[in-house]
Image (cartoon, rainbow over all chains, first blue to last red; front, side, top):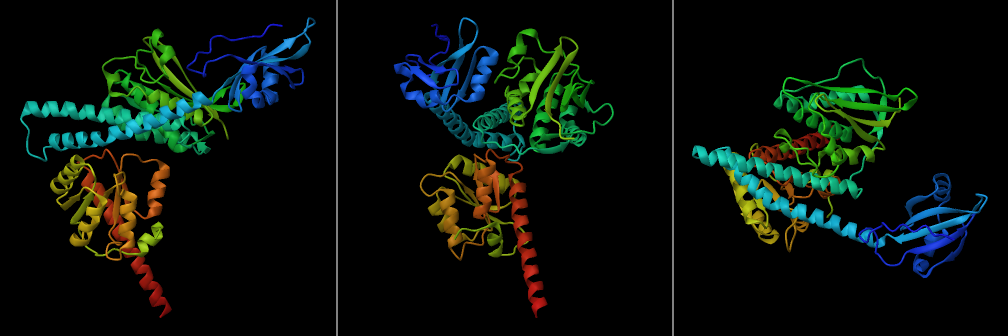
Length: 329
Length: 161
């Protein structure tokens, strides 16, 4: 009998060591196991039914349950009949502990960074505002540079903390029905001053959508704020950024798609895969005002509301970021 | 005594000044104290006293009678929470509104602080140019809420009589 052993799980994901393998019969009862799986037999004996069903329908399935990660593969006889399952298991507790330590570290470092930043930003703010007396012209201009960068650092630290809280599940989203037309209006109004900085106008073209979605209004405003400010940064001055909402798909009316369309230069091919990754920035003068974390946060927020985010882009023509949310009306 | 926001209001304000004048700032970081001092004295025009520990802050509060205390939450030794508790347990000091200053403000922490009876929370890093305005606004709101409560109480008493 062949055991499907996936060799590509690296030590960073698990605690290494010998693969833990066990065999279940066709109804999911544990029948045999090797020594390495002895400590995980509880989880092995309780592979959820839906995991077994998925493995049967997909041919092979990998997922987590009860503190382990498992790769489940149906075992079939010559005639193709289901004879049982092979299950390869990894204990995830070591990984969890490392993740939790790393989160604590991020949180502590961010906190330790904020205190000196308070002093630096405070000192520079008082200097550049001239409340401590006028600075010589050149001194003033370098103080302004230092102040601008200290503010950027503050934003980065805040974004890292936000992302960390989102991933640790410490930020809760409270989903209620949200009127989409009202949301778009509010988002345009709140972000118009930012658009003005880049000479870009935010616009809601077309007829009202009339739908409501399941979401957290404040978080949705944050999502749209991020998408609109990105669109403004990458749009030519004098252009318009369109904000639209529509039923996601004619065949599936249960979702509403909200789109932010810009007429910028589009996302370069080589960068597309990294768009939602942390500290990923396509570069360019205007992009440097961001932290490289905005889209990671946006994605995490959309997913926390049960939605899905994506984009379409065409070089030289522009980019449309969209997210789909459950429709309630 | 654990105070609810209502209980904090019940205590009233020790002095009903129309202007915020004296601010006591307690923070273990000398640099931050210097910035706060400049931001509130030069920008805000208030009179400021600074202390680097909860203990010395309590002594200063008793001798100087500030209109408002700006209190750092995370301090070695007696932290902001313990200092707040001491202030609230002292009948001479418990009416002074306290604003927390903190570098970590989650929604949970904010709620906890309000429950403890602070008049507001200032996040770090703060903007030194708007700090005075923020502090003044929070102080004023506390004063107004106290006046409202006093009026309501007087009306209730008049109604009974």
